[in-house]
Amino acid sequence: MKRLLHVNGAPVVDDRNILSAGPRGPALLQDVWLLEKLAHFGQELIPERRMHARGAGAFGRFTLTHSLARHSRARLFANVGQQTEVFVRFSTANGERGAADAERDIRGFAIKFYTEEGNWDLVGQNTPVFYLRDPLRFPDLSHAMRRDPRSHLPSARNRWELLSTLPEALHQLTHLMGDRGLPASYRHMHGYGGHTYSLYDSANRRSWVKFTWRSQQGLRHFSDAEAATVMAQDRDAAQRDLFDAIERGDFPRWTLYVQLMSERQAAVSLFNPFDLTQVWPRALFPLIEVGELELNRNPDNYFADVEQAAFSPAHVVPGLGFSPDKMLQARLFAYGEAQRYRLGVNYHQVPVNAPRCPFHCHHRDGAMRVDGNPGAQPQAGLDWGGREQAEPPLPLGGAAARWDHRVEVDDQAQPRALFQLMTREERRRLFDNTARSLREASAEARQRHIEHCSLADQAYGAGVAAALARLD
View 1 (spheres, rainbow, N blue to C red):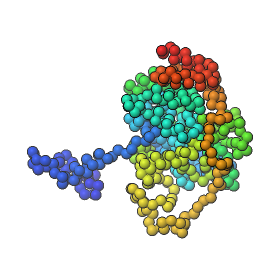
View 2 (cartoon, rainbow, N blue to C red):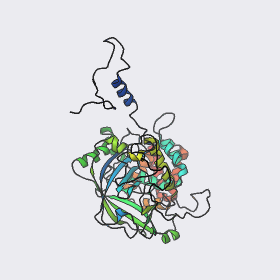
View 3 (cartoon, helix red, strand yellow):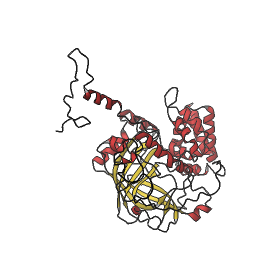
């Protein structure tokens, strides 16, 4: 049995009785174990993630089944059969750390690839689109989704007061209020990178790319009534399902697909390929199989790996890059900044976040620097032997200007297409789910959203209006 020690390595004399001046005397300040234990307990919580606080995670591997070497010089995409260690974190978007798993909400789907060239973070979710294309509104959206500042209760009214003013949100809302808004487990949902990224080949030629994960377990979803029953019985249902499946050897798997678009195709595209509220039509840009993701090991300690896991879309490797997607551009800063606030400026040294390949960089000092800092290397410059790697500049083009993101964009076409693919029963559930959520909203917010639905399809708007009338 291991001995109980203080943080300085000295033995703990007694972990059951405090040091005091007799049975009726006060506790003594010199009981340093009491002080250390209480002080650590009072400060052992770290700031909660602002979004995606409620999560589960596991380790596994990505196996390449079809080479992408023609399009990307990233080594993990080079040789069929090559395996890359990964860590995946699933989450609900808006729930706090102690929230229930079975809420109608977006699910986060974040993958950290420990490649031989560094870590690549593909930070996505279980729907292919998002509410916004302009990042200026994201803090407003987050605030609207959180608890009411006066009552500190969830407020559908607050959510819809904002969402009903965002025509571009209808595509995401049609996914969220449909069946896929309530996956039965993390294993039974697809994942999407969402944003458009870039691939660079060995000659620095660029292609645009979108990433899609398709669950090999199939899709399963709860109705609102089923979810209410699950939450009453087990608030940790999705966490438990993932953990238990891996423990019994029923390893969940997903197939990775990409959609590719050339720069020439992007230049003549009738839709904006960098718009996060829109998908690329698969008839024009078909899914191309790339590899398989398998999760096969639960973390030994939840806090060490799942809670401290830090993802950022800014983390790419040679052969991968970004796009003019404005939401992506904002996330390149916001995610790293959130992790520096939550875990500290040296969050990349936490084992779950550290690259598996040899690495060094110019970063110095900061709280919890534990890697040598980095020794006697000069403070700046490249005279210590570091090598820069050139990448082609990203052509954004044009002078900077304020951008009206709704000009010449059809915010109804893709929600219309999604709605028209639904069966009669799927439409009925969409209407009922939307109406239940809208019930607390103001009359003005209800009407705005019904108008958005009607612009997509008259039957969509009429169905939501009729469902609301039945509830009233």
